[in-house]
Length: 330
Image 1 (cartoon, rainbow, N blue to C red):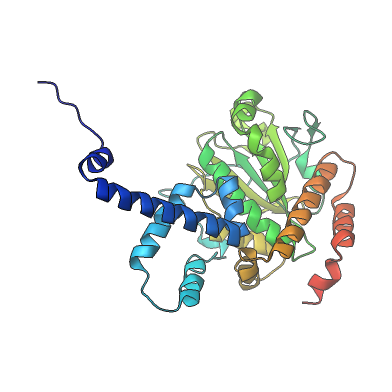
Image 2: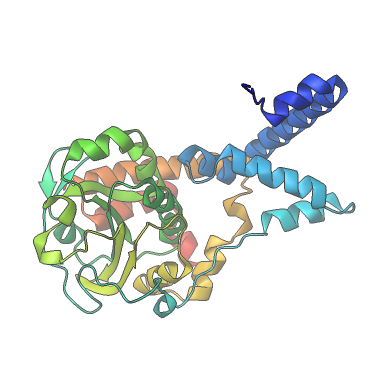
């Protein structure tokens, strides 16, 4: 005998019209709440648009919140909800990989060899250059990335965090996303549509390295690793991190290495990243932040194209928003 199995939700709808109406009301209620969240929290909307968080994840969290939240002060509950997940900044020495230690790329204290990449985005798309030489003496973080989507999603979180740090300090950290692939089309066919958002998030270099999946020969990268992340200053590696599957979120220990690279205390950087204004900006501040991101993206393109130095770009940015003196006076 042949059996036909209907989805559980469809069975419920067929059996109980009254229940169907209740479900419909619940769905509409959650949708309304979801839209209100996006409207009131620009930072959350940006995370959704970048792919860092999905609508389904937010809806699921709303369901949990509505069934578990006790009655009481709504403002207090909303504040607890917003602050539930805080960004941590930890000692980079505490970073650990599962199992035995894995080596990939130059180690701490070693000089970064020169190498060539080909730009995948911006005014100089298709041009070859050396990202180490272009960074000069500025601190930088290099993400040697395979074509897996996990690491790319995590890169948005890192870039947004570093962008917030760069807005507070004069020692701006250059973020480079360097893909490792045998064919550039493998990368562009999957990710070209998000290159613009990566640039707006603060990724100044979006390129593919020579050497295919193995990467530059002088770097000794492990081809079985999804991400090799190098934090460097004055052309030397200060920290080396590897992730076999790619990091979905900004790791607190790597953020600790970022703090060290720009010469700030971990507690200070954590305070910057957890400032309430990052997700609850008024419309005027949101517009200002949008214009700041656009200018930083454009200046990043000019720096990558060799038309401006990073120092000149920084001066133009501070002149445009008169933010340098204000930040230093805080």
